[in-house]
Length: 295
Image (cartoon, rainbow, N blue to C red):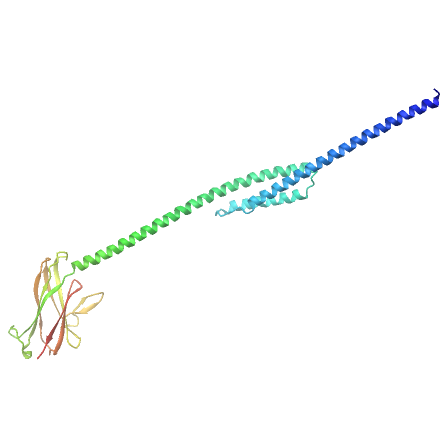
């Protein structure tokens, strides 16, 4: 074999080796690019997952009710919400191939989530306390209203009982008899001889009335409506005011029926017509009777 053939064979071998080497590196480069594409695709997927996690987390706590009256706690929770939004915006502009920053953002998200959860736990606890306190306050108000109603009922019952006792203890005057007397103290029917008016009456029996010294007030009203009185200062209390009386008489009352008499000395010209005699004891109007003076 001459030198030329030897050279051709050697050259062919070298070319074959070069072609094999090129084919090897081309295949290797293709595999590396494919692997890189797969890695980038995986990082893009991880970034999308992290973005979705951020968004879900933001939605989860974005509208969380903060009904507690704790401004500092609500402010801290709002600050963490803003931080989540800032991290989400940074994640969106961060390239998927920036593995270090994405890992840092993921770590910060975990930290923020834990902080916000602790705030939420505190808020939930305060909300439960508020609900319990509101329920207790409602129960207390209901109990107060019930107690108030009971007090009002008892007060009305007491007032009714007081009124009943007052009515039961109220004295009554009966057995009214009117008699005209002459100057000698004898009954007369003759108008010119009338010198004294005699009023007999009976205080009824009442064991519920308070015993003791009683003042009986007699109020005589003439036909013209004027009250007959000896002195304008002759007044006694009745229904929160002072009214005139004609005559009065003190008597010892022990709860049993008691008959008595009151006189009116005639010192004026008596009108002809219908008169009225009203009796008062203990500030109560206890009897009213009509009588007539005629010629």
